[in-house]
Length: 205
Image 1 (spheres, rainbow, N blue to C red):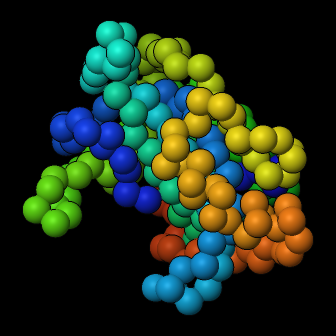
Image 2 (image 1 turned 90 degrees about the vertical axis):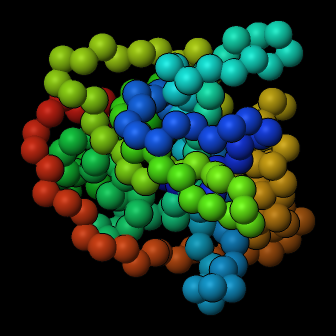
């Protein structure tokens, strides 16, 4: 596994409409290892970012697709959130051979469907990714409009210049980032329900 998905940031816009949206993955960020007070353990996390071509916004006079993200623990354990997300996205379980060397970077530029729901936080409505699904067989696969963004500590690179500030701040709070001046970074798996039984479809990665 070379590199292996928080409540989304609305950036001042109204939340995305609830329902199923066609989406394209344009961002993949290694957030590093963080300690959770709730679960009393440390885990390495990954943020997957999608753009929604049918939902638009205007930024500095430019018409752009809306974006949404999901954070998961970096693990391909069969009970992990990342494993379930990828299996649902592919529409097919992994083989043992694939599990021994899957590069998460393969999801960049891949299309899918997202189930978006709302929740209330301090009286304000927010959106989040409830589920990821493969595109229907034969459906058109949109291309990303944003430039593809990628960061991984294993590659020893710098945070991309156009990384949103809130993502960069999370990365800089990680054990790995602080470990660049000395120190280690423990990794822990999450404990979710087993992945669902899914039928065979076209596999995007």
